Length: 509
Ligand SMILES: Cc1cc2nc3c(=O)[nH]c(=O)nc-3n(C[C@H](O)[C@H](O)[C@H](O)COP(=O)(O)O)c2cc1C
Image 1 (cartoon, rainbow, N blue to C red):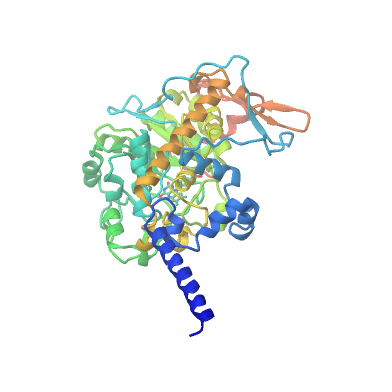
Image 2: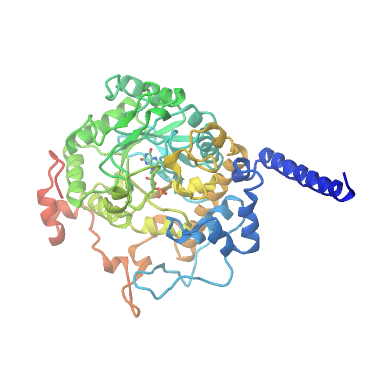
């Protein structure tokens, strides 16, 4: 062998050794999920990010602007999750004169920041175990849609940050329980985890499981903004032993969530069922989640509360802009009410029927930053939940492959090899960091608006450009009902829906 070829061999050998060493390091490190799943080659992402963000966008995140969360929002979530403050240099990139641009009003006399962010109490007069809830919580995402490690990281993050995790309709899995974070147990049309052999609701299982101390509240899922009016199917191949155990269904058989509930078929029966669940749970807060279909439907539910003489402890309004693990495009893009409208309808209907004081209203749908929280509080919410932002806090890069089981960062997959890339220790800290920084920013925004508690927020504090020269506040743009106004004399624009609404039937719009 000549001198040259020996030298070449040595260089190649050294290069191969370096690559092998880098690959071993990537596989062993716990900070970057993408490197654990794509050793060596995954560095391209970070290299391009260093060189020029635009290059990264071109090569790796093509069409980024068309994805649900824009680059700025994603960066803020990542930075906050990593404990970096997430400030931006140089000023806004938004067109502040654009039609429809919305902003919050600041005060000439901001108030001091409170020592702790405000919390709200879930639990109306019929609840004997009220729960103190944060302004921002982990929205419903099932084990099945999420990997075990993602569920664990979110739960531990919730425990350390003092907020709640909604289980998702797949029920309570062992991964929801391991770390002891507060849970809101979600029950959907499949009644997973509290299901009879025939697929109905099993009151005995429910009574037993809801006693668990980690279950702080129960949420009945009526519908979800990203796919309202349809159920869901978990394909037979994904129904592993542990998913079957969590859901109470046979292994390896297709697992169907029907489109509608069996336990009620009228608004009255819905409210009676909520009251029954509260009783079975020993008086824990019980509520429901829905994407608003129509105002008349909401009014029918309010009438049922009045007739039955009880009410849910909370209602979560989910907007059509909300996320999902999988849904047909037709439903994602064309069905269901956006959060702003649904939330204001729910809030006003409850105010107008004199029920608002006893029910807390939650909001979900693309909540990611402090301004989203404050905006939703002004529009009528008491608290918020976020799903995809929490996924990003545990490392989601918005690859939009959740439905293929090929999530590159181990967040939305049941493939154990991929899921192992998600390091629970570091990612749970990120969930805690992200939630805390976001709530802190919401509180700081409120302080800058002269408000020391969310109850002082008014619709005058949120404004929208109606053309290039003028803006109007939400107080001017929308009709806000006075307490019990519908019971006394329904205003003109509400009258037809109010008269048509009946507690005995879910009406067509
Ligand atoms: C991966 C994934 C799984 C979800 N699973 C559920 C579920 O089991 N039950 C439910 O009510 N909503 C589910 N959702 C919807 C969210 O809880 C929430 O309503 C909606 O995504 C709004 O939150 P976002 O816009 O912050 O993502 C899921 C969303 C995602 C992204």
